[in-house]
Amino acid sequence: MSKKIIIALTIFITFLGFNFANANEINILPNNPLYFFKDLGRKIQDFFTFDNVKKVELRINVANEKLTEIEQMVSKNLNIPDYGKYFKKYEEAVLKVHDKIKTIDKEDVLEKATKEVVKQEERLNRLKDSLRINIDDFINKEDISALEQEEVYTDELITNRVIEGTKEFGITTKDVLKTMEVLSEEDMKLLEQFAMDILSGNKTEKDVEKIELSDDARKKIMILGFPKFCADLGYELLVEDDLKFCISPLGIKCTEEEFINQGCAF
Image (cartoon, helix red, strand yellow):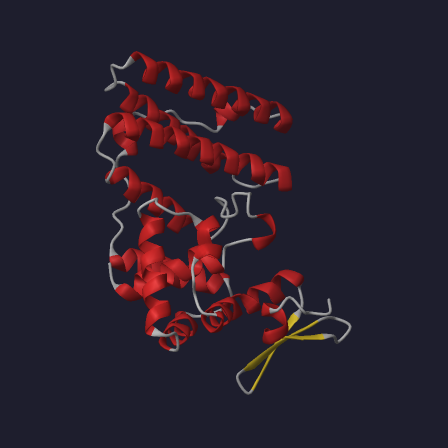
């Protein structure tokens, strides 16, 4: 995986997707364009986990995270389109747990894993009741072998997803590369290492605050999120001489500098 792709992953997964106001919440949900990278990290971690007991524990945690993500989506909006694909992905995660449990012969591990799966099933049923739908209608319990036919994460595929991600944020890959070019060598090394930690499962987007980047680097990266901030408000984005302004319907302007310092007047 190229260095530029790795750093681009870091920028998207962490700084543009992290909600500093709710650090204890799972912030990158399945309907977020950055979720591809989060799932990629899980798959890489699973691939490099060779101990069967640890792999069962890892897969249980992934299933739990996927269920929590759906719960958080529902808590924010009951009318989520495409329920089916989110429930199906959760069920696929559970099926992978069952597939690996078959290889375990330790009584205590089996008991612990079974209890956790039962707890998740109870949460799923409560979620079904709150939505007043039959989740089973959405879940297609396919054969495990079919689930193994997953995407091959080539540099080209990841690059294309980075391009898709930039469009969602109202910027271009040129904007990202331009930002990377002006970062110091030390900041670039820190970003690259953090990206590898995320993809290996050693860190999550919640650890972004622990990266010891320079203030200048943080500001340059955070500015990339300015167009989406303005678009989410439904305000106009004005560009003058390479400077961007977010303008409210009342004519109140917010500059990029005010945005990164949380000083916008609206």
